[in-house]
Image (cartoon, rainbow, N blue to C red; front, side):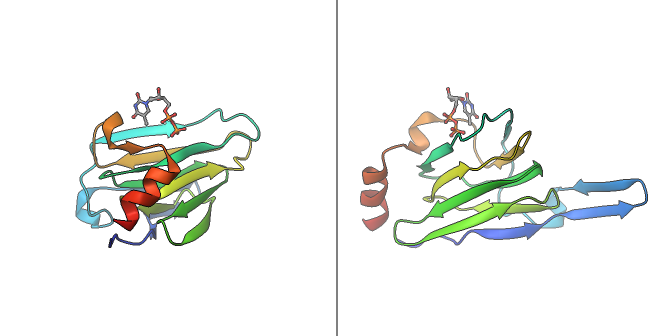
Length: 136
Ligand code: TYD
């Protein structure tokens, strides 16, 4: 089964002596999906892993707006580990990628821009089912 690849995206950022401002809007052409939901992970306690699921259709851009964490992506045949620690960079996650977020630094915040509203039926939470779906 063919899916897109994960991709790091640089976000338009204005830096001056006061600090930085990062902006994202449709005309930038950074995202090839419409944002229909925003959520963020914060207050993650030490040693916790988040995610551990895949999505059938959902696409996402994940940004470490504060701190650092690791994001393991698995498309059913290959795994890739990304370190996210830059508020001016997002990681574009295509559909059908198993993801695990871990090793959060204290106070880290993971902002997620998503292509669809929350829908539990879009989740694949069983890794063996994920492998079946991606090998079909
Ligand atoms: P969960 O899927 O366990 O989060 P993660 O994948 O980051 O570990 O979601 C935690 C709870 O939040 C769960 O009860 C579902 C709920 N939730 C929403 O209501 N809306 C959302 O957009 C998301 C992502 C989760």
